[in-house]
Length: 446
Ligand code: PLP
Image (cartoon, rainbow, N blue to C red; front, side, top):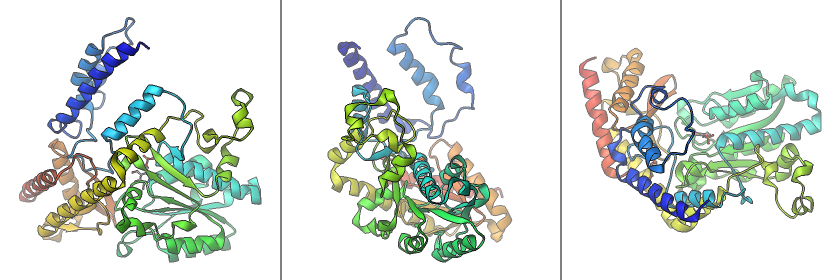
């Protein structure tokens, strides 16, 4: 690599990215193209001769960007956010620039899905070492019907029998959190049936409605049975940097493992999912290998932590660098105000919804997600789901904002999450106006 060429091209690229952020609001938030559109615009094979950066960037502007959903747009209110920041970007740049394998710094996984998978492997092997490998078919895992689907996927990979995955039913009255009584009942029932409970995945901030499972009460039950207790706080873990939200983690002391996604709501560019584990030896016992070609004095002498034994891949990106830069360039106080500001904006949106009697808030807002729906005319419940699905299509196809949906207690619900770094009060006000206009037009035509 030629250092001067790097300087010249990287400056150009930074200019392109800076312009992108400057104009981000001019793009429709949700991509407006048909799947497969790009195939018609690009050649079938790679160029034989190199092309200039200018030509490539022109294609990015005219061909790629129209097909992109702009996750960093201040009008992105769907799913959960994927944060980026100047600090995170600079960390990513430095990490790419140094382009080395990371020496670690905590157990940072790429995603929550990987975090859940590796701890499930560790827990499975821990119990099978005690009771014998033949018992795999008897192992039972627990979560709630609100647990993220990455848990089900991890179970599929790990070989848990599909019938032994207990996703316990939650109810509206306890805000879609896992009830300790139902967990206790399910465990007792499974033990009586000759099965072996061994893993609980609790959630702080569920994907559909940001429900918080009661860690303290769940932990007490788990302790009685020696079940691995994992806490998935992929989204809401970030909020716990504020003392006023910290109580959501009360009881975490009993957990065997915990993960949060710094790339969701902690200003750290994707990907960065922090995983803590109480007894690292369990993970290492499951995932370590020791091939000749990787042996060196440091690893043989156990003077270094070998993170290849904590995760699926051997090579790992230097993710800690960007998180470290976010922590240093923002400082705790700014990170706390960042979270508080989003929660305040979500509260404002919630107030606007509550003032309009045509709508209902369907779950208590705990963090920055508002779950709501448009009420059907004449309380015609059968029509409600279609009405709200049409409302979602109407606002999303406008290109002005992007939201997503879920189903709670059988009802189609709209999810409005505030979490994009550039979102300000004016975006919230404009988004609400859009909802009101689209709703009026739908109700008039219904
Ligand atoms: N857990 C929860 C609670 C989530 O909300 C999500 C994604 O939104 C995940 C896990 C999966 O995250 P990832 O994409 O990092 O695997």
